[in-house]
Length: 228
Image 1 (cartoon, rainbow, N blue to C red):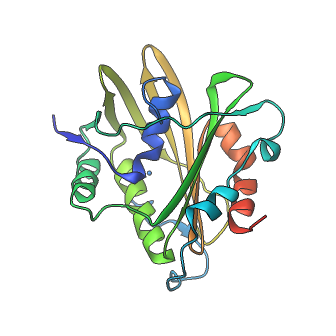
Image 2: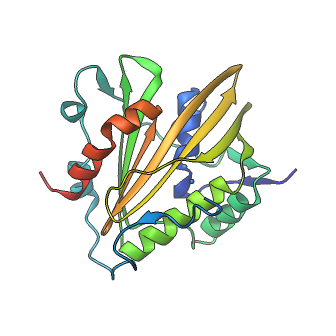
């Protein structure tokens, strides 16, 4: 059994899994690495948006509608999260440890619960960097996660069994990636959907209950690319 402590940006989906099981405070095809995309090659670099600008483009309760409550941000401890039996994720961890991993220049995040249910959550992450770096970085993450159809994530004494499967991505933006994560922990089994859309120098990632991701993805992409 191979173990690697993961501290990389791209594990937002894994942290969503842990969050939905109440195990952590907060993450992606082997052939899926060829994402659905439009427009041919990735365009040249554009100036990244600031974190403040990204925060203004996050979804909020008025965008989502009634029944949604924003979750307060809590300190995220990545150092106690361990991936078991997935060499590709281990390799990503090594890259991150040497500073060559997926450190996008700017980021912002918001998470919401729906009708006070801990199992009905949706989170949005926005990143900004050069289009080429965003494309390569998120592609590596989805490749790594989907290269291991089944693996485990541990946080403290909690063990989560994770399964991954490629999901159809909607025709939005310049490039698209999507996957379903099935996890089991504490006798419960749930599914988390994660979809990433790149629009120029902005990357939109929406994760959570599949129905909520599908319901709000287009709005997240629209707001992510247009200042309000």
